[in-house]
Image (cartoon, rainbow, N blue to C red; front, side, top):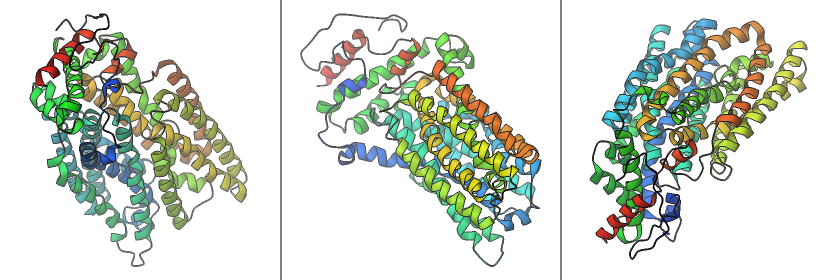
Amino acid sequence: MTSAEEKITVDHHEEEGVDLKAQHESVYDILPDWGRPWYKTPHLLHLNLILFFTFLSGIYNGYDNSLLNGLQSMPEWETYFGSPAGAKLGATSNGMLYGNLLALPFTSFFCDRLGRVRTLLIGASVVIIGVIIQTASQNFAMYTVGRFILGFGVLLSTTASPLLIAEVTYPTHRPYVTACSQALYGLGGIIASWTTYGTSNWSNGSSWMWRTPLIIQMLFPLLQLSALYWIPESPRWHVSRGNIAKAREFLLKYHAGGDEAKGGQLVEYELAEITYAIEMDKQREGIQWFDFFRTKANLHRLFIIVYLPVLTQLSGNAVLSYFLHIVLDNAGITSSHQQLIFNGCLSVFNFVIGLVSLTTIEKVGRRRMFLIGSFFNMINYTIFTILSARNAQEDFKNQSLSKGVIAMIFIFYLFFVMAYLAIPTTYMTEVVPFHLRAKGYVIHTFFLTGVLLFNGFVSPIAMGAISWKYYILYCCLNLVNFIVIYLFFPETKRLSLEEVNRVFGEDVLTDAHIIEEVEQAHNGRA
């Protein structure tokens, strides 16, 4: 094989046997025609069904985020823990983030050395421990420690899951399946919000009114652990560890249905593409964190990784997600019963919109959806801020203004969820190459945690001090987001994980020399 840095071009040619040809620019060009939809194709149906269990990471993460909103609206929880507010309330919401920070140094090591599946196993196990401690909490400190441990496990599992999903899915399914795993984050929110609403109606006043929703969270990682034996490891991870045979075995079984005659061409192409990309990585003097600074392309990737948390958490959504009860109080809706119903309805709405967004990810594209989302976030949040200001000035006595505020929350989430719920994780797995993918997730999570800490500590204090005026910050940030996306976020639709390198100006495995090797390998097995 030639040097990974050498670009090879040859004229179009044809040979007997399998003909991949030099004009093929994407793995999409050589996909076999199975003659029926994926859900009627056994090997594809099997793969997608077992991947559902990796989605559970997003579900129990979404459950936890919505759960905190519900618990804060329950008088029994408030009374038991001494009505936490301000910095103390920030410590409660940020307890999980401290666990995230502690897990950061281990995440890349576990994913790259132990594999994606084993990391998922460790993460789910730690989540269970954290849930048990929270459920058994006797005081505020014990509850916060439980959230700390929960955060450690959630980071491991929510990092390993999208990596695994992106690296094992069938080429045409990858953007949809990866995005679906994040859209189901909303399903966790639905379960949590309506569970807290249901237990809040218990009349005995027992602490089990808030302990029950906590312990239900444990069901998801338990179910995940029960299925991990059947979840296959990433073929890219196998290649990185030198297990080419295991990688080919996976591709033949799950991407080609064991049919060498019909799917062998795809298997050889994918295997050669993966091997080429990882061999190119190995030609470097070891994979280091500073690789992000060694090339213009990697600096571009690093900027995207660092900026994505701004898009997903500083668009105004964090204020509405974690401190919805304060927003509703500011809108004049102070009834615990009404707030819990609103939280449940909003969770259902977000989940439905998240599923709808899956239909746009390939048709509209990642970049265009980001642009649309940031533009309408700016418009909608500005209207939301104006209505909130007017409502406060009239002492919340104008019911029409209160209804307008509520309507704008739903309209804001319509565009936010469409653009920012599922697509960012898909985009992350695409723009970062294999050798830096786990490290990229760690860097992304580090900055995400920093943004979340800002939201957790600053937002409740700022909202208590200046109320609706704090929303102006997010109106401005949404304008900045639109400009940054337009200038720096490239399109990645209809490209394999390795082919995305092209949009960053790097070589990809479409060279005729490599394709000839694929032809020879497949014809040799025919």
